[in-house]
Structures are given as C-alpha cells and as structure tokens.
Amino acid sequence: MILIDGKKAAAELREELKKEVSELKSKHNKVPGLTVILIGDLTPSQIYVRNKEKSANEVGLKSEVIRYPDSVDEKTVLDKINELNKDDTVSGILVQLPLPKHIDKQKVIEKISPSKDVDGFHPINVGNLSSGYESSIPCTPLGCYLLIKKIEPNLTGKKAVVVGRSNLNGKPMTQLLLKENCTVTITHSRTKDLKAECLEADIIVAAVGIPELVKGDWVKKDTIVIDVGINKTEKGIVGDVAFDEVSKVAKALTPVPGGVGPMTIACLLKNTIECFKRSQK
Ligand code: GUN
Image 1 (cartoon, rainbow, N blue to C red):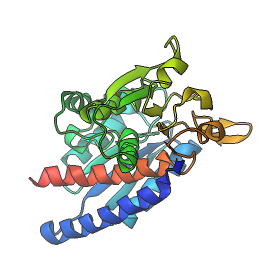
Image 2 (image 1 turned 90 degrees about the horizontal axis):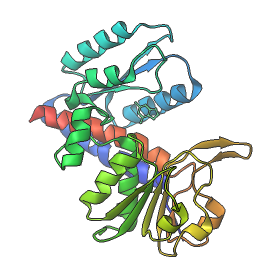
Image 3 (image 1 turned 60 degrees about the horizontal axis):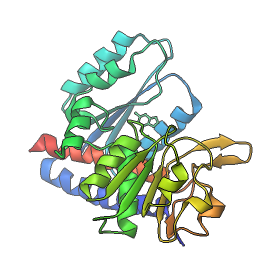
C-alpha cells in the first residue's frame, strides 16, 4: 500500500512555487499578493489563517491578514472587498469561512472579483470550471487531484466515486475527474447502496464529514482512496475513511492528518500565483 504523503507533496509544490515567484519577481518587478479576511475568533479558522500566512511568506508572496471582530457589519466587509478588488497589489482575496450568521456568505463570495477569487467559489468560476474553461479551482479538490495524478498520471476510463456533493469539494472534484476522462459517480447521504458504489471504484474521494464511513470491505484492491474528512471524535481526529481497514486493501491512501490538508494550503498559494499571472496578461 502506498501511503500518500501530503506533507511531502505540499513541500515539493511550495518549492516549485517559490521558484516561480522568484522568476515572476524578476520579470514584473513585483510579487503576487494574497489578502485573507478573518472575521471572529473561531480557533480552527485562526489556525488555518496562521498556516496560510506562514506558507505564503515561505514562498515569497506578499501576504496580509485583515481581522474583524464577530460583531463587524456586512457593509464594512463588502466595502473592504470592493477596495481590495481595485488594489493592484492584491492578486488573490480569501474570506475565511464560516462567517457569523448576520453576514450573508453568498453576498460576500459574489463581491470578490472572479479574477481574484482564489477559493474558486464565485459562481463565475464555478460555471467556468464546469464548462471546461479557465478558472480558479477550489483548493481542496485541486489538492486531491494533484495527489491522485502523482499515483496515476493517466486517469482516462477510470471509475471514480466521489462521496459527498458539497460545493466546496464533491462538485468541483467531479469536474476535475471528468476533465481527466474518468467515469464519475457522485454519491451522498441519500445514495441507496454506498458500499456497492464504492466497490466499483478505481478512485474514491471521500468528503462527507462522517467519521470512518468508508470501510475495508467497500474498497477493491488497486483502488486509490483520498480522504478529505477531518472529524473530531473521542479517539482524536479521524477522516471519512476507516484507515486501518482500508490501508490493508487499497493501492494507495491518504492519512488524516498529513494527507489532503497540507496540499489545500499549497494549492491556495498556487491559485494566488495563477491569478497574478492572468492579471499580467
Ligand atoms: N474554511 C475552511 N475551509 C475553507 C476554504 O477552503 N476556504 C475558505 N474561504 N474558508 C474555509
């Protein structure tokens, strides 16, 4: 079984990005900039944002975090996004989710200029991705995709089963696998026989948020299994895949933590650089 080392893959990607930033700096005399807006003081969000800032600095991006208290009003945030949309030194804007209840998430997402939407959440980018046009690609599925391609560069004709249909993961993951000529089945909580669907798969991407849902006897040998889940349980953080069981049968599997997570942040940096390059065309 290949244990897919997301930490190592992310470090390699950051190394490539660092070189690219340095080349862009020589060519354009400026570096891509990432601005993150963080509202409130939720601990997981604080940790994510700190990691994003650290990684951005490591590859040489200009990085800024704008912090607001939970009580900030929606207009202040929308006005700030407007200002950042017009700022040439800002290549990418990310508003950390979740947001406080009184702020409309969709309004915030749609305020970000599609050309600076490093999350790939803006409807224009969602539409472009599903139409096969150039777009920002959500960081988590992009990270999963790069890990799968490392194990299996040619995905043509493979059967892929995506477990979970979220806008963040399941749906964009499906688009990426379709682009690679996979036959994709999207499954979810109402799927009749999830085990039978998974047993057909050459590739499984589990992103449903149910601890250890995908069992050892749901997986064929030679299947690549990508676990996007991060679930807090009594025994600590576990994924959506029963790691001990599945690692005995799968061809390759990502651990939690240390699998998809580190790649997500590296892909955010990649997206920032892509937005910068498109803005220089
Ligand atoms: N919160 C947890 N994951 C994400 C993400 O990918 N993007 C944003 N903006 N917020 C998040």
